[in-house]
Length: 54
Image (cartoon, rainbow, N blue to C red; front, side, top):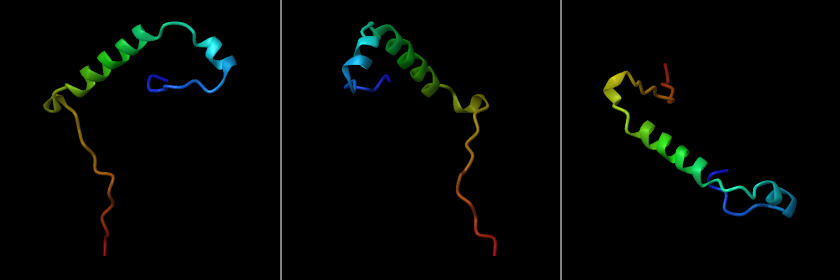
């Protein structure tokens, strides 16, 4: 919803008339915090690739 640029129909648009700027601001602030986290603080990267066991 934060990335939606066009609302599909008039009925849906009527329900979304409120200003979503504050919600988007909080979303982007949370995303920035997530991206800036220190990887050494316990984050793990798990490979999704499988190895061929022959």
